[in-house]
Structure formats: C-alpha cells, structure tokens
Amino acid sequence: MINSLFEEKLSSGEFVVTTEVGPAKGADTADLVHHIDLLKDRVDAINVTDHQSSVMRFPSLGGCLLVKEHGGEPILQMTCRDRNRLALQADLLLAYSRGITNVLCLTGDSIDVGDHKEAKPVFDLDSVQLLKMIRTLESGTDIEGNELKGVPRFYIGASVHPEADFVEPQLIKFEKKVSAGAQFFQTQGIFDLASLRRFMQYAAQFNVKILAGIIVLASARMARYMNDNVPGIIVSQAIIDELADVEKGKGLQKGIEIAARLIKTIKDENLCHGVHIMAVGNEGVVPDILEAAELVSVSP
Amino acid sequence: MIVAEQKPFEEIKQMISPYGRVLILGCGTCMTVCDAGGEREVSFLHSALRLAQTKSGNGTHSFSEYTLKRQCDPEFLDLLVDKIADVDVVLSLGCGIGVQAIAERFPDLPVLPGVNTSFMGMTKESGVWDERCAACGDCRLDETAGICPITRCTKGILNGPCAGTKNGKCEANKDMDCAWILIYQRLETLHQLERMRRYYPPRNFRTIPRPKRILRQASINAGGSDD
Image (cartoon, rainbow over all chains, first blue to last red; front, side, top):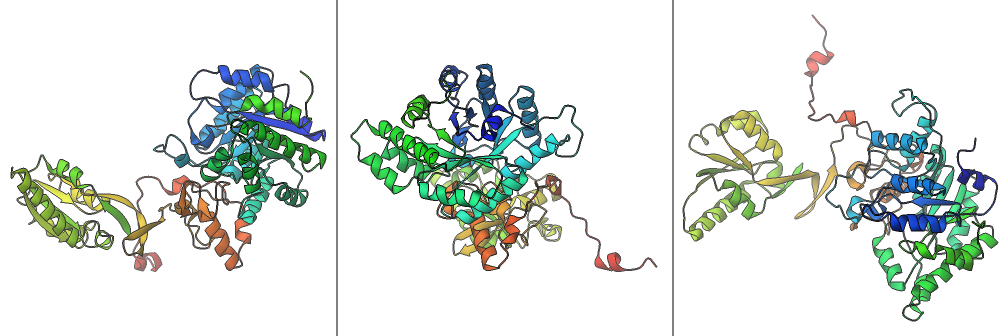
C-alpha cells in the first residue's frame, strides 16, 4: 500500500529530490512560508526540521501543516529528544489526521549542543524504537497494546551515516533500522562520493530507498565550524580546500557549484534513489542548485 | 560508591547564616573516599569557617565537628544523640542520603547539605572520579560488554551509536568517549559483536518507580520450610 506522494515517487523509480526547511525561532512564519512556496513545486518533498541542533524553534509538526496548507508534500522530522512515548504517539496521530504521512525518525541531537542546555533530555525511545513504535501504531494498537480508534499509516524513514569514522557500528544500526521498518533513508551529509559508492554497494541488498544527503556549504569557515560543532558532519579536506580557494564573497556560489556537482554525479551514475538537499539557512539557493545540477523538476 | 562535591564556600556560609551553633558532620564512607566530606574535609571546613568569621569580626557562630562512620545507617546515627544536644543545626557533609537519614531520625533538628551529591562511580585516578552506574534497576551489562550505555551515553540509547560520534568521542563533549564505540570495540574483542545486532526494546521505567524500596527476606526464610 502506498501511503504518500513521496512514497509513490520513490516507488516509480524516478530520481527523487527532497530538501528541508528550518523553522525560525518565533511565531513569525513568513520566511518559512516563503521557502515552502519557493520549493514545493521544485522538489518532491520538503522535510521540516525538529528543533535542529537542539535549538528551540517553531515546531516541525507546525511547519508540516504549513507545507500541507501550501500544497507541498511534507516529511515530518521527529526526534526523541523532547517527547516521551506518549507525546510521540499523540503527535503521530495528529500528523496522520492532517494528512502528514512521511516521517523521518531520528534520535535527536544532544541537549548539550543546543540553546537550552539545562533542559531535561528525554530520549525515552531511540530512533530504532521510534520506527518500531510507528509500525505498532499501524497494526492498530498503541505501544502498550491498547486498541486504537482509527489506525494511522505512514511512510517511514531514518538517517544513516556512510562517512562515519567508525562505520561498522553505524551499519549495524542501519540494519536495525531496516528491520524495525524504515523504508527510506536520508543520509547524513555526503562529501566524498567514494564513500557513498561503497555504502550503496553494501546497501543494495536491502529493500529500501536511499537519498544522499547534500549539505550546501557557504565558506571554508562554515565547513570547519560544522566539522567541529555539528553532530554527524564530516566535511572532507578536499571540499574545504576548494571553498578556501575562492575569493571573498564567492563562497556560497562555490558551495552551490559543489552541491550541484555532487548531485549531478550521483544522478548520472545512478548511485542512489535521489538526493536530500540541506541548505542550512540558505534555503533560497536550492532552485539554483537544482538548475546547476540540470535537475529542474516538474514545472509548477 | 557515591561521589559528591563540596558546595562552594560562599553557599555554605549563606546556608548556616541563620544558625548559631553548627555541627559540621562528616561521613566516613563514600564521602571520605571522594574527598568531599570525610574527617579531613570536615576539619578543613571547620577551620575555614572559623577563620572567615574572625575576619568579618562578628562571631555569630560556634562550630563543632564530628565524623560518623556512615550517616545513612540508623545504627551509626544513634551515636549523634549526645553530639546534637547543644547544636542548632547540622551541616552534613554526607551525601543526600545522609542528610535525609538525619532529617528522618531527628525530626526537630535542622540539617543542611554541605555537598552536592553527583553520581555513583569510581575513582579513575587520584582526584578524578567517573560516573558508572545510573541505578536504572534493569542491568543489561551482560549484553553491552560490561559498559553501561544508560550511564555513559549522553542520550542513554540502547540500539547503538547515534550519528554524532566523531573520533570515538561524544557529540555532547569532545573529551568524553562515545559509550557505543567503546561497547562496539569491546564486543568485538570478546567475539560477541552479534549482541550489538539485537533489538533492544524501550526501557521499562517502572523498574525505577520513585522512590524505590527493596524488601529482602532473610535467606533462612526464603529457602527454609514452614515448620
């Protein structure tokens, strides 16, 4: 059974493009709506981040509602950092009732990397357990086995880190996610295509769809900062050098070029089922990347 | 053992300010081992408080000191009866359990915490203590090569490392080892890596209803006959 447009696209075998929008801190949704309108017809689905980097913002579920309202296809990013199993299940029921059926299941960043360092870290579940809990909801009961009135259906995914320095434990976890029910994966940022090729060669044995994560860098400084401070990101030295070589003010242009080059190679080599573009604060340049990658999707 | 840190001196001065006669009470067990509230710390704190009072010029407090073998044990608390006859407050350098044991045993006596109780752990090297147990009530150390992910992973997750681990360190603190990389490496050494492939269901938090109580029958009753 197909549970979302996004799933339908991936099932059709066409090269799928997703991107993400990060809600702002505050009740003003103007920028968010602007980015949704800009991107909804240019990509196949839009992730809405869930207090990215543990920084408190407008919620993912609220952002997904806006994506829906504006005619886009949302992917609900759901982390286990702030909600216990009751709250997670309740939010999933709400999401389904409003037509939000794509869910990316994440453990969530540590509270310590964010802006509410004194908050209580929840982590009642982890990403694998969250995936499994969603499958339980779909079977008609809550996690305790109590019958649901109205059964939700989702298309669920998770993340994987092919460029991790200790890759084997990450692959073991990837396989646990597959067993728990993950149907699609959006990888952590890929900077070295050799590692993606290795990963895809291994991952081909599993019946899941994989979208390579592409992070848009705006400068060598940003790349180094992310290496030091952002969980799950390892920018290769070659990319840092490339960014460092351009003249001042041209960093983002180079970042767009790098992202487009990675995407084009991935598509041309048919390396995986699609890409997930993370523009981290530069959502506005996603159309430029698509154009540079010769990937202008269905016209609006 | 239980590990604690003595509270900042200013905070201790502030806490005792409403009271005249202060008994500084050490604990001879964990607090002695972690250098937070044993006989030596009691004696030093006594001197420091007296000195501070002399400097400020108004002698409002009188201090006495004593160290029990264990503050958390009723048997030893009985020894306090004579010591508290003429004090207004006990400044306990025992852990949070010691402070509460005193409060329960002596309903009319104010008691103040002189340390911040931090965790259950072990001495890593001189002057360094590391947390090792979260008292979760459902020990799975057999599955994780003797390394506790609930205590040593900042997220306490059960199904393997998150993606934030880098160079074997934790995303929350670059000086802290990633518990799951340690578990992975040790499971591999022990030829037990298959344990990492198992799915671990969500934790049962009913194993830690707060407050916990353990009722243990004497073994002669548990194993014996009825007659």
